[in-house]
Length: 188
Ligand code: AMP
Image (cartoon, rainbow, N blue to C red; front, side, top):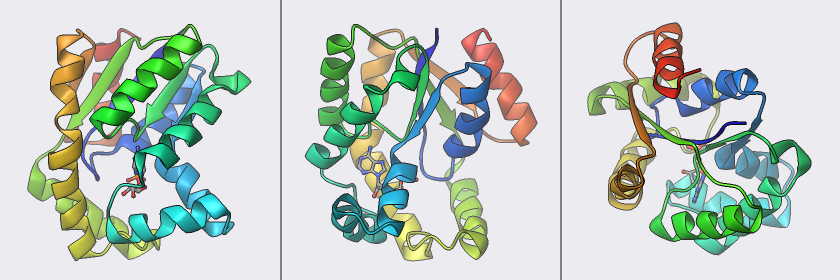
């Protein structure tokens, strides 16, 4: 049973590492960005609400995101092990997640953070923009998303450090190298 968060700025490689890590821990990979994007492409009500925030590089309002995560974490495949990718991103989401997990008699084992140089992040995102087709992968929005991360999400790291859950991993290098560092940090 392994329950963890993966954090780091946009472009740190969270999605890439979370996908393979979820298989290794045999848990659900819960990416709030992926769930939002699926809703946008299906043009659901949730998708319509989320889209304007996403396109601008802003966070979707907490009440919308929190309700979606509560629903997803309550599903069977997330009961034993899960990796939450891209959530929580605000202090308000941290306290909601605490409540959700307490209600489910669950908790967190690790908060994994991938650290990458600022310039490398911008370069990776600009490269991704060539093929991703994501509306939020333009240079202006990329830079704004980094600012929002620093203002809203970086303050979560000391909270999890205080709790003794933070595992910082160097996110520079090849995908395989980073994967090995993650396994070592998590004791897998
Ligand atoms: P990501 O794929 O994780 O980079 O997320 C893409 C976009 O989805 C973000 O820029 C936000 O607009 C939205 N989003 C994803 N996760 C969250 C979250 N936890 N809180 C608010 N907005 C989010």
